[in-house]
Amino acid sequence: DTEVTQTPKHLVMGMTNKKSLKCEQHMGHRAMYWYKQKAKKPPELMFVYSYEKLSINESVPSRFSPECPNSSLLNLHLHALQPEDSALYLCASSAQGAETEAFFGQGTRLTVV
Amino acid sequence: GENVEQHPSTLSVQEGDSAVIKCTYSDSASNYFPWYKQELGKRPQLIIDIRSNVGEKKDQRIAVTLNKTAKHFSLHITETQPEDSAVYFCAAKRTGGFKTIFGAGTRLFVKA
Image 1 (cartoon, each protein chain N blue to C red):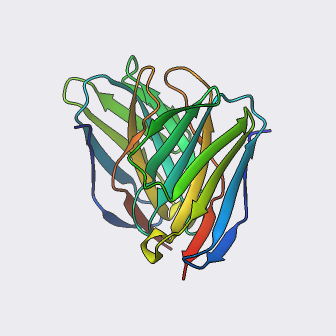
Image 2 (image 1 turned 120 degrees about the vertical axis):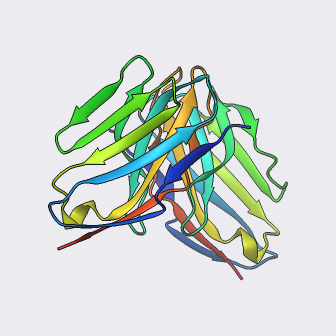
């Protein structure tokens, strides 16, 4: 199984809502990532978890809150988002260690209204 | 800081022609260079990668070359087909690091 599965595929939320994005992989990868991608731009790293511990936070606003409940799951909790947060949110995973490719999920298309 | 520059931003070729995309990286410690293809509305997918101890790698119609001294690497697609139309991202990563530094992307159009 070389799949990274994200739910939901699409999400529309108001600025006062609280929602969560979910990501799951069963490849035994110990590094998991959240990326944000705006149209016509490359993916932009937000968070990295290594062995279920937060390793990198790229100065992401606190309205985005990541969580790694176990080695297969990664969540991104959203609260009080702004319209400019509308984007494609991609989860990825990779094997621990050097020189390893990242496998991306199909993404959640988020629209904040 | 770490940076990957990618050129051109848009490339239009006739079906059957070759396409070349070039990237330059700034971090000397980078030693892994993946290339991702992203079709419209879909996820980025790895199409080929190269490690710093290798100068060239080929997989059917796709090849990548790396010049570590000049910090350049390139993607070559031969006999292009309409289904090659997509955005291509080059990237660089260092040993033991989690951060993948992406280029800005090249939008490739293959005209039938």
